[in-house]
Length: 246
Image (cartoon, rainbow, N blue to C red; front, side, top):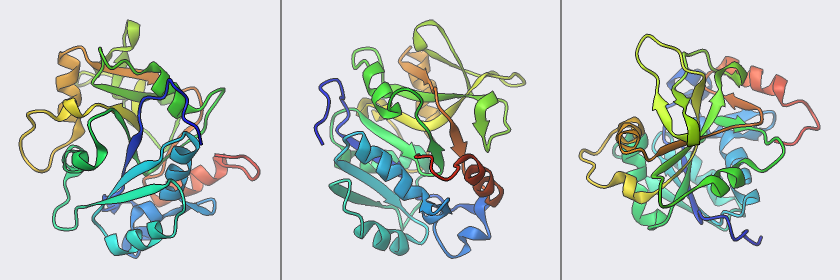
């Protein structure tokens, strides 16, 4: 598949190493990434979307029941290259997991996607919308932002305000924000410079990028679902009506 000239990321990382504790008892025997929603696993849905967007190289981190997920990924034909980032010895959280995988991802901006979300496009491919918004000179991170009123599987107080120009400002304690981070983003490797410790959350880096004015968001225009519990599986399947492509 030819990649459009405005499409900067050439690689992606799928975060699939989580324990899936809130998904139990479903995840007592399978990793969360292999949970099936409307007949297709979460990891396959994510990899399908990356392939559709022209991504040819994907890094997937593994920890819980890693052998099972590795065997599943070996059967896939697309994207062309799927590489494992092995966290069997230590679960590194979102930030530590991506930092460990940076040698596999290269020196250019890359997509990073949580495997427990499903999204639908509206008028344009969501990943290409993010790519067309990316500005290497002004951004270290570009996050897909979901209006909380349209977020299935979410009942929190939101994460961010979107200011003029797309800059993000984190919600202050005891307040409500209209947007949550939707688990899809473009990151530049420079975001991880100077990070200490093995295991840490990406939120630490978002806050640093916000302080430097380099954290941006893009409002999602389609449907979005978080699949974090067994109840969320049923909710997502009700949204994903037969015959609708996701």
